[in-house]
Amino acid sequence: MADGTAVASRNAGAVALADVVVSFRVAVGNYTAVDRATLNVGDGEFVAIVGPTGCGKSTLLNIAAGLLAPVSGSVKIFGASLAGLNRQAGYLFQSDALFPWKTAIENVAIGLETAGTSRDDARTRAQDWLTRVGLGGFADRYPHMLSGGQRKRVGLAQVLIRDPKILLMDEPFGPLDAQTRQIMGNLLLDLWTADRKAVLFVTHDLEEAIALSDRVVIMSAGPAARIIGDWRIPLSRPRDISEVKLDPAFHELHRDIWHKLKAEVVKGYAQAEVA
Amino acid sequence: MSRLGLLALQIMVAIVAVVLWYVLTTYAVFGRILLPPFFFSNPLDVAKQIYVWFATGVIWKHLWVTLIEAILAFVIGSIGGVLVGFWFARQPRTAAVFDPYVKAVNALPRVVLAPIFTLWLGLGIWSKVALGVTLVFFIVFFNVYQGVKEVSPTVLANARMLGMSERQLMRHVYWPSALSWMFSSLHTSVGFAVVGAVVGEYLGAAAGLGYLIQQAEGVFDVAGVFAGMFVLAAFVIVIDTIVSFVEKRLLVWRPATADTRP
Image: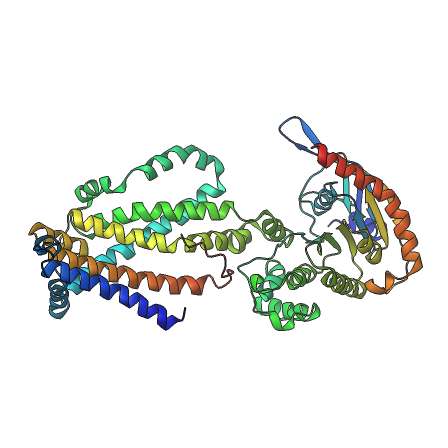
């Protein structure tokens, strides 16, 4: 990175999307998934994006990851325009993204090995990370031998071992049961508190979003989804997911945001039925 | 059912079949022999023939030749299939250009190629290897092609986000995926390698199990034909067992339920 951008990075946000438009070519004409979305994630800030199903939350995440290029608008990462993949971001996917032919420890170590770390060194650090996510004794298991929650833990270790400055998460705990979700949420918060990264967390679960984040951003129903609300979550940290949900302030926030979100959810369903 | 019980029943099927075969070829039922020994031989003669082959050691040479042919056909066909499969999967334009020709050659019954291979490569092992290769190649090719194309987009995106270069993607993602598809068709491709060898021998050779069967047939030695068939069957079962063992070792990472064995 050039010196100029390095200086800029100190005061610029970790992720800055400005007037981002995403559209796909479909059978008849174009489908606009996201329309003029503007979103800033500060360094060390935990931001959740909530919206009805199919509103383009994941699309926005793919834009920030550099996996997808916007039709117009700008994407800046620490003040520098993003071209190609976002090398400073770690991405935790919604569906299983572990390499099924690698054991847990190989899956975690691979991100270091590709960056040129020696095999032994990578293994040692991978073992550390597996222990940190509570899977120290599962190093030699293949993904299919692990439960859904354990696979997510391996995925988390796989991403965090590279120490990315930005963490992108696409409904990472979506397929898990309620208890496991809570445990994973607390694990995520613990890891995040230890080393504050900028987090962009996509979810359809408003409670989860409020409990975890500093800011909750609401997207409208697609197509041409826009960002329609931005709430600061002033709940104190460190938080425990199950306890924070008992806080009266939590309920007030939930009521406020849900009021806005509900209209969009209804709209989303209506559109899904037409389509 | 317990393992032992199952084994007992399996053995019983063999005993009943052999006894039926023996009785129907030896004793007259309602005044006539239902299976004339001239066409069906009988278990004792077949067993005697097999015993003679092994006792004199004649059979080893033929088994060895067939085995070598099958192994060469498998190795050469697999290497070709992997290389071309990878190439086509990574170069969609090349694949599109060659697509009709690949389909045409694959649709061709390979047996008709055997005389041409004999003409080109002689009566030695290489004409049989060539026939086996044409069979094995397409199975491996289609599987590798599929394996490279069907890599989960999420896994691929994850690999790229983890900083893999094109070369690392090849090694850590495409290659294992293609191999897993190839191994899942291992039974079929090994089986076809043997088929290629035996059919090639049958159509013209100086040694091998196919040759043995063809020779016996030429002099109406039905016991010899049956004996050859039994040896061939045992040979294939042994190879198949080895393949199963290798497969189990190589695909430990696969969930046991997703058994894609064709």
